[in-house]
Image (cartoon, rainbow, N blue to C red):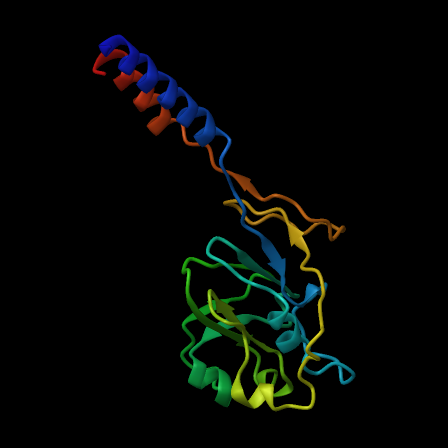
Length: 197
């Protein structure tokens, strides 16, 4: 009977190891606004960033890519109060490399970004990202005539995600972004089953 328990435990450990090896973690890199550049919105679409953020369900591990000419713009993360008042003094985070990647490291919360250039926030070059909530709906935006229709659906364009920022590709194809292989736990279970089980 004891040998059958050892064999059963060994087979379960082996199965667990194979399942863990095949586990994949899906994280996506979003090019903010699905545009070629983080810039002032056009007069024909002044709420592009607000609309774009409402179309996505951001989760832990995702990242936001802001592309812009570093000599002409920058990106800052600000508080909700600074976002609403367009106060760009004392930002939480300042980036100015033209290829700014913000990794979402929290499973819940709100993140507020704006251009670091004076006057750009007032011209709607700002974005509110909600993670793990019900969406990016501000009271003032929800009552706006520019708010999205109820049936607005658009695909999110996912690009490759890695530990090092990757230059955006010219295609907007969807990619699985990273694989997560767990060998230690499964291997340890097999070793334990063989020698101590």
